[in-house]
Image 1 (cartoon, rainbow, N blue to C red):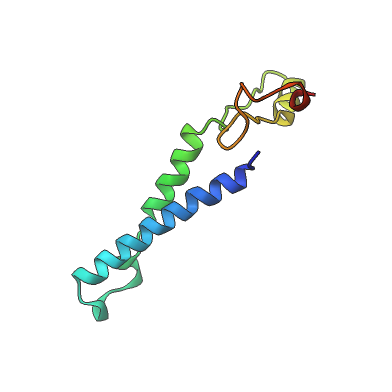
Image 2: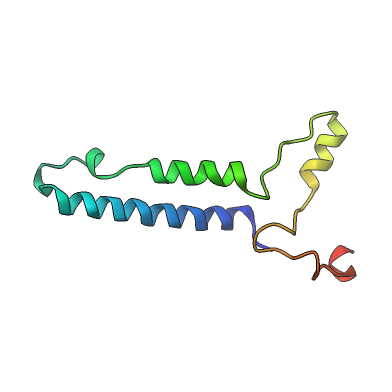
Length: 97
């Protein structure tokens, strides 16, 4: 089972490689001496990747705020069936116990 931090790290690494590619493309197309860092590096790939992760991930859920007990139960749940986790076929009684 991978943690949310590990999944976010993978998303972040992919976004950083896109930022690197965009910066290299901009450096090859323009005169490097006159460029400012703001013109060279864009944070849009990072922002969009993180937003997409939290909007579409199986691990991203709305918190159940009906009552305090439901909220506490929701916070304690562990989703082992998410990306990098178990499949329903492989989840035997040993894992469920």
